[in-house]
Length: 613
Image (tube, rainbow, N blue to C red; front, side, top):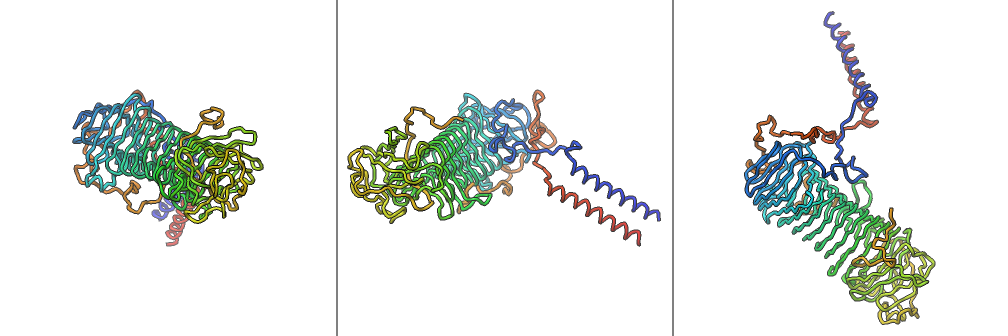
């Protein structure tokens, strides 16, 4: 009987505790229970692009690392020399100077650790691995100290351990990486990529130059860029992301590449982007994005210049889904033969190509033309005819003779699309190519001219219809300036599909304003070798290699990962952003309540069974 009473009391106590826990979770905020969130997670990025730490360069270093040829000295805790390399084993703040002749700067810290590294005049060369390698951390912040030159170089052949770990960049990170600051960084890779990250990459400052035989910047997750001056020379893609690329400011100059910027989603919000490629300048690849929508390219501002002097069957902007130009300046110049198309979108996938604002001059070939979508908010004029020579000046004037835009295309072209905010349907404009001009009425939002047989005629055929005095069949050559056609007509596009066009270096706006804008990640490649690991399944390199088990720290701390704050500054492990994100939404609360009720019911049944027995 005594046992039964004790059991009954225990059941009542457990039931009361279950109900109490449920009440606490349901009213956690009122009772002062605080959920710890990672302030550096992508969901907490300011305006959806950058966290405070991504742009913070004013932190104080607690540990200094001096590189000296084939060794290093460490003043402070959290890091130690490891043969010819240096390992950072703890969250914290580190200032690095000097030269490492053949080794790596390695981060191998806790999975929640935030590691801040300041490159303060550093030269690191690694013959068989990444020169800067992140084995594990929550996030690493690589700050380029003001006024410094920093150089990172990797060799042609990586070690078996590095290859087993799928290291594929001169700077390689398994986890999130940020590069900021105002100093200079030169990255030279002889094997695969320049800067590679298995997770996200944020670049918010610095003068960065990268040369690589494959991709100069390669990330498996998202890439966001602002405030940096970046120069890239790639053997394959200049910028490659498995999910998305967002350019919010700064400048990006791609001198050589196969494709310029490749990702399922590409956004240009501001800044200056210039790409010289042998294939597509910008490519929104894949069949759909992570949220199930079509891939797309969106340009809201800035200046985008895409050049291709030698491509065949190449595009200026290529999207398997949509192209939306809402502002800024867009200039595309591809040579006018070989099936090159200035603007190519996924009409076969239900995509659209819309111009809703900004100035666009798009020059390319005429054999694969697509007209702009009729639901564009801003009119455009597409002309296709005979090939115009490289350097031909393109000018658009309104009926009063005011010049709306002018541009000298660096490459030859046989089709050109022009659009600017001053254009309006129902008006007549004069399009001049070199010394030949033609008055063209803008009959619809997407008006085409000189195109016989509709858009998309025989591949390789002449897309230009009879242009009369504009220079013979389909061409504007040879006609007198200002003459009108005797047999040509202004045809309107009949489909709701996309466009061709192009240009080169940005022209000067007629009003002299240098900035006329108003104030105010890809599928896995077949070879599987381009950084497709997600960082969660990493093979362990052989013992003794930098990727293997880490030796105990020389200071003798218990876990080998000491953290030393300075001047009351909280260490990264103590900051709220260090913890993993954890929240309970409405569904989570219901689930918790159901779990507590189930537990109570089970205990009650057990009690009744016990009592009956």
